[in-house]
Image 1 (tube, rainbow, N blue to C red):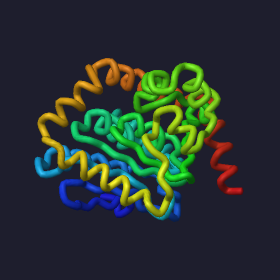
Image 2 (cartoon, rainbow, N blue to C red; image 1 turned 60 degrees about the vertical axis):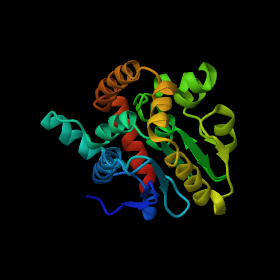
Image 3 (cartoon, rainbow, N blue to C red; image 1 turned 135 degrees about the vertical axis):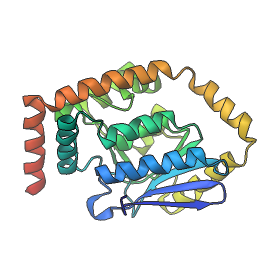
Image 4 (cartoon, helix red, strand yellow; image 1 turned 180 degrees about the horizontal axis):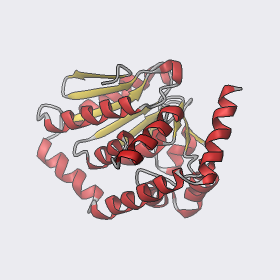
Length: 253
């Protein structure tokens, strides 16, 4: 398990914190495995009423750790298994309790797409959201090709997913991805209070209302299946290889 994901409990809230600040909380396979376990344990624990996800030291996540991501993808392909990141995405989509996120700094790739699966999202003014999948020769993931147009409208979804244009906390609130922009010094406490408020609601009524809000999960899961198929096909493409090589060269420089 990864030491870069901290899991704790306060009252009926499970706190999950990305804690790899020296790498801007970039996600590794081990971190994805720990996240999946934390979500599964919170789901199974009847005393947990909500999960609060955040980053450490003013950063949410820079997305995937590219070196680890490519190695894990090749290993999974060779073994015909599902990468840890993909398993987490499905766990996220199937999570059956209220999910709250507190976002500061960069929220790249999965850092943005996971917000579509949250019930409440609070962001500091420093938050910067981006989904640069096409820039890397890939396609959107985590159901974002369906959820972004539903949430943003088609024009703004195209800006975010096709152009890959980043957007700030104020824009995310206007688009409906973020509930409220909260000053950095108050963000953690505010997000926790909202998480605790959810956890204190009559549990069965809350979960039933949440299911009604989300509707039939089958179309979303089917879209995620299609995204994943194309995503891994694109990973093997010359376009993606060239994009990743350019990205890693830039990172070295």
